[in-house]
Image 1 (tube, rainbow, N blue to C red):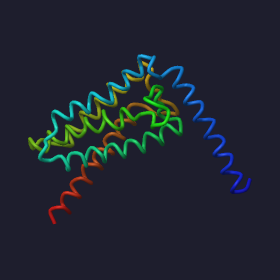
Image 2 (tube, rainbow, N blue to C red; image 1 turned 135 degrees about the vertical axis):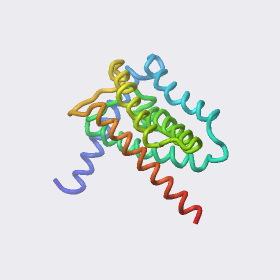
Image 3 (cartoon, helix red, strand yellow; image 1 turned 45 degrees about the vertical axis):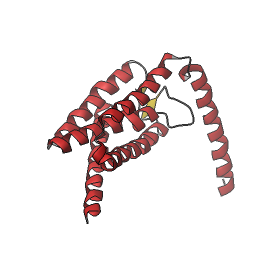
Length: 185
């Protein structure tokens, strides 16, 4: 197959997949389904909590950290979903990444608040991150799986989510500390 033929096939298959996502969303994940409202709540509630708990003197630093968690988790989740390892069965809209509620709100806000707490109170960030990651991976993801919101496939499981949480959060922490060091000169 030639270069242009590959791209024509990619565009055609992509259009078909997008149509499947839209049809699925209309039947199982739109406004008329209770799962949609749970997903929406998981997007909005953490952001509301953040509005009332953020240390306003350190907003740039805290949002930089949370944004880094968000971006890294979004890219990894897209890769896991596209390759069929970690599937989110309910989502806000077929246009956005399927786990937007988790990768744009729940996870970044959770880790941001841990970062804020640990840096304000001189607590061990690594220990608190391990605890929160364990809660997200072994408790929250297990509840999501039980309720049918997510599906683990191809050997993916909660332990791998735990490791991904740790990796993303530690990288975000180190990157934030690096940026702060550059900022101070």
